[in-house]
Image (spheres, one colour):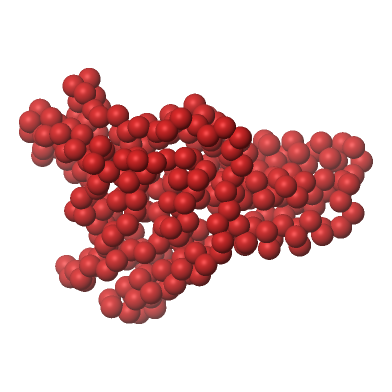
Length: 304
């Protein structure tokens, strides 16, 4: 089991540190949006907490205690948001290694998939922050417009329609087009926390208690493995967005923002779904030379 855990704790953080060596890049924002303020909960929000905690199956046994638990949890959240701090117990997941296929050799660490499970109560403050953060991003048009992943009213279907339309439009003009598919390896696990916080402050323009809250949420995270009734000691998590979290997908989209700007500057049509990018070279490109310039630009920006 120690060999398996070393695979998850040694290699992935090293890849994240390697990506973190690239210089920062920011998305051009002409007018900075108003500062995000994380608003405290009121009594009108207690039904949302009750709804989250009452989801079966593991929490049915607390159903009769929810009227007492919800106000207490609301007080915890209201202390966390203005102070910009997240308690360590709320950001320590347990990792359960599961075989990818029953037929695989269980002695080979690469045959396991790490499943991260956060404490259930963590998702309540995450839900509160994610709702406010998502509304802020949408209202001020801070999402990448050509990103279909983890967004309301977007899906793999909208991504497929956009890419298909771009290809057919070029073909209808009698031209051939070149489609390049970019898939980032272990993208969610190699997000550098320093780069992500820089994105939040320079691109999204978070500051004050809101930025401090996200910094506390990301920094000093711990995780441990539990398998066959045995648990390892806790190890620090130095990179990656939290797996199984509500905020993880949103934070990953923030980290990916410069990639769209880099590709757009090179005149390449593209569309994104999470970490998958479809680049379509228009007909006026006789050769794929823009791709040769685009790739090092993505690496220099720290976007890929």
